[in-house]
Every structure is written in C-alpha cells, then in structure tokens.
Image (tube, rainbow, N blue to C red; front, side, top):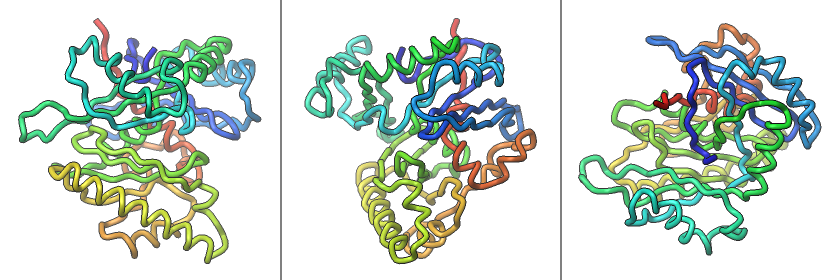
Amino acid sequence: MGFFGKTKKLNGLLAFGLTADGVCTSRITRVHGAKPLVEQAGFVPLKQPVTAEALDKIARDVHAAQYHCATLLGGRDYQMLAVESPNVQADELKAAVRWRLKDMLDFRVDDATIDVLDIPPDPNANGRSQSMFAVAARNSVIEARMRLFTDAKIAMEVIDIPEMAQRNISAMLEPEGRGLGMLSFNDDGGLLTVTFRAELYLSRRIDVTLAQVMESDPDRRNQIFDKITLELQRSLDHFDRQFHFVTVSRLVLAPLASSSLHDYLSSNLYMPVDALDLNSVLDLSKVPELQDPSRQQRQFLVLGAALRLEETVL
C-alpha cells in the first residue's frame, strides 16, 4: 500500500488520526452545490500506545465497517522531500526516486516505504515537471500502523499524510488564479503549505509546537512568534524564486484557541493573514461542538483527510 492509495466504495471516507493523547475520527459527505457536510467528528482520549481493543471499540461506535477508512500519519512518522524528477518510464519512477533518496534519509532506504507526488510545472511553459515530492516512511512504522488497524478489524484502504490533508482544505480557499499559503500547528510542530490550482507546491515544517504557540508569558511568546515569522518569510521568499508563476495571495492560519499569533503575523508579515473558521468551508450543523476553535484545531487535519476525493476504480 502506498501513501496515496485509491478508495473503491461510494459511501464516504472515515478518517482516523492518532494523536499524542487519543484518537480523532471524522467523516464528511460531499454535497453538490453546497459546502461539504461534516457527518461526524469525534475525539476519544487514550494513553499511548493505542491498543487494538480500544481502536476496535471506537470503530464500532462510528460504524467504521460501513465506510472507506483512512489513517493519517503523524508528522514524525515519515520524511517528505522535494527531489528532481527522474527522466524514466512511469513503471521505473519509484525505483529511480528510491535511488535518489539513499543519501537523504535518516534511515536506510532499503527499510523505507516510498511514494511520490508530482509538483506541476508552469502551465504556460509546456514542459514536464522538474520536481516532485518523495514521501518515505520506515517499513516498521507502516507495518505497525496496518497491524493495529487489522487487529482492530478495520479495513484500512488509505494511508495519508498531513500535507495532503491540509492541501484538501487549502484548495477550497484558493482565489482564482492565485496560490494560497496555509499554516497549522499541533503537537508535532508547525506545517506550512502552499497550494495552487488544488495542487501542493510547498511543504515546510516549522519547529514550533502548539504548546509553544499558546505560551502565556508575553516575552517568550513574542520570541516564538518572531521565529515563526522569520521562517515564514524565508520559506515564502524561496518559494517565490522557485515558482515565479505562482502568486501567493495570502496566508491562512488554521484554527487556534487564541488570536495572538494571527494578530502578530498580521502586523509583521508582508502579505494579508486570515484566521480560518471552518464554518467558511464546511457545514458543521451536525457537529455543533466544532464551533469551538480549540475543537477545530484538534480536528483540523483529520477533517482534511476526510475531504479526500474518492476515485472510482473500474
């Protein structure tokens, strides 16, 4: 199984996210001409490691057997690297990328599960893509995750990553013909993405956790916010040089329980910064508890994973 496997059923995707303190689940229905409807969004606090017995109970509570199921890896479960696209046939692509990664990973490439994601070129250049994302995870990580879900009697069809989950939400906010930056935080740190025409063009990890963003001491908080601002400026300037054909119109900050970071970035970043309320892109009428920004923060990535579009397999 790769990271971007295809789903085959027609009755929706149920996403599972394992966090440091529990399990998040979410299921979303696409509605023609309206915002996607969040059918379910829950969190069960559990000590780590999560057991198959505990996951089986959650699965029965959310009727997992009726739906496609996806699991969302944590930010420390894999590495994502931008590499030059090998000039090889499609059936040789992963092998060529594996060879290129052999000196780039912090573990043996022979011990890796690898998948690739194309970075589209300038649409006006009529050229082939010059770069792509390579996603690599230790085989042991993938095997342990799959074994956990198998033991919990959950038929797992998709392994997804936070960058793609965040992409799914960012794509719904893009202005016509412009790119969009999005920044989120959780216990794994910060994640900056840039999307354009619903494609992922940039992924950067920022070494600042959610707990640090929520720092109560004003001096320490401002030091942390300075670090975030500098990382954003460097990343976005580099992106502008590399992808000159994409104009990033604004930065959207994923839900947080406090407005402090939004206020700081709005005053110190050179582009407009918006704070995201998921009501603007999702119908939350069935899950009123998601009106709470802290709940939106916790569920943000698993909701993005549940937005994954299904592909019909003939």
